[in-house]
Image (cartoon, rainbow, N blue to C red; front, side, top):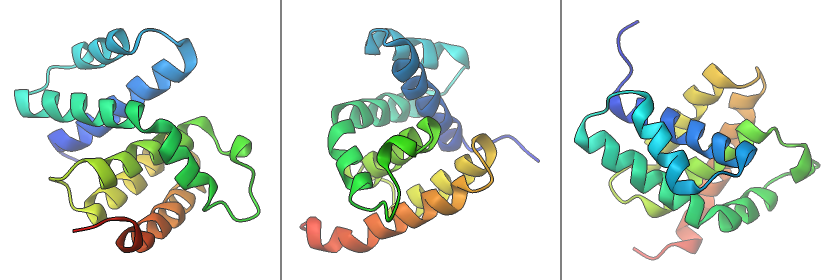
Length: 142
């Protein structure tokens, strides 16, 4: 397997930063700086990481509401932290990052879930994001 695409590395860095923020409660600028310092990224990837992290942080509550409305017979509190943060990241990317097609955001989130979370996570993430994507037309004006 070759080197991961820079955007994949960026998404993984954002997930790590969101997780660090969730667990430590450290200042978000410090958490983002730590994520950017962990590896050497090209300038475009650094911008992508910063924008996606900021979008996820700025819209976290809204994204979590989007997730809550799509949990059938499941309590939000029972969703694994990593899955919840990955969903927040992907929903932020779908809604607030104009240069990424939603289907790319969804497939990336599924692949990251396969790598970092439980066996069931990729299906769960896929189901929630697919539902988000299908309802987008009703929410978003072109």
